[in-house]
Amino acid sequence: MQSFIPFTSCVMPLDRPDVDTDAIIPKQFMKSIARSGFGANLFDEWRYLDPGYPGKQGRAPDPAFVLNQSRYRDAQILLARENFGCGSSREHALWALSDYGIRAVIAPSFASIFYANCFKNGLLPIPLDEQVVDRLFRDVEATPGYALAIDLVSQMVFTPGGEVIRFEIDGFNKRRLLDALDDISLTLQQDEAIRCYEQRRSALEPWLFP
Image (cartoon, rainbow, N blue to C red; front, side, top):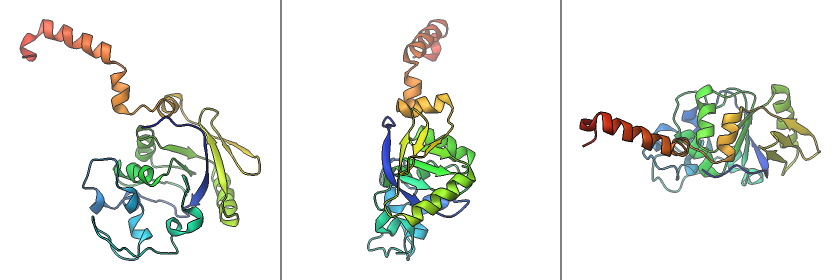
């Protein structure tokens, strides 16, 4: 993970509710535990006109799908509808979004497991009021190159017109993103306490520590 710093990016609108993790990264591509290489198959079944499988070459992109439209090519912010990330708890969905280049997802609501997994994988989920999201969809679609600025420290989203949209995030998850702390990093912060515990156990129950 990398520390989450303020950034500005154009916005890619995915105007579909209840986008599940199988749509984000279909099951046939989940054959690796490496966290890279999944971006090419993000939203695979919507992104291509032909069925996909690992290693398939020469895919035909669907020009109508948002990822294939040049105006959104470099977007790092995904604008979505309610219940984004529902379905199975696969972290591959986060890996695919991050590998593609998405750093933040804005939606009215997120599936709870997906939301929790975001913070473990360096992705910022921003829940906003549905009316605000509706307005952002209209603005994005009406304005080529529409960009938002996101500042996690101040918990603010800045629109091109100067509007400030505040969002909520609990302190623990905010710290995880700002300090780039995945589960392993969090555990290693207790390295000295773990070492002391193991020494005490080893003295009391040496047969457990050959």
